[in-house]
Length: 191
Image 1 (cartoon, helix red, strand yellow):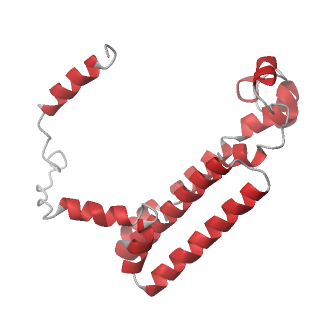
Image 2 (cartoon, rainbow, N blue to C red):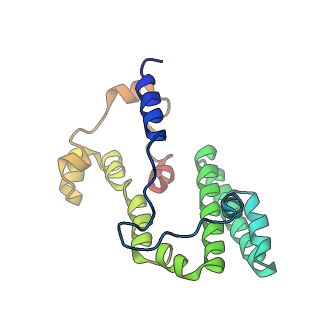
């Protein structure tokens, strides 16, 4: 409880602050208040929270619903395939739900607001961010499969990235299945 008290005091202080007028720094006129902000929030929520995404897609028409159902089937098939080959089901179900939710939201955004879609999803920066996140697993894979020092020699990873020791005896002793280095390849690579 003592750890949370400063946070509560800070929250009380923040509640007394007045929000600055939007656009004031840029010299823009103050925007009009949205007539129904919670209705707009609900409409946005329907496009990203499964299974409500099916309702959001249906509001876009039969074609949008069809694309959404195909995407759902592809994601479900991919997740089922990964689980069938022995990958951990909780991780892949969570990733599958996330992929489907982002697809549904991006599809709805493309229909509703093409310029915003182009600025968010249609930029190389977004694609590079998604790919780079997936590549974050490479140093750990390198260390696990090539073993510390050989990783540095074979790939050019420095000691800080690739690691310099081959084994972690404490892990092998306390974590069941720690010697099975191939089982989690898909899990680490996608995470």
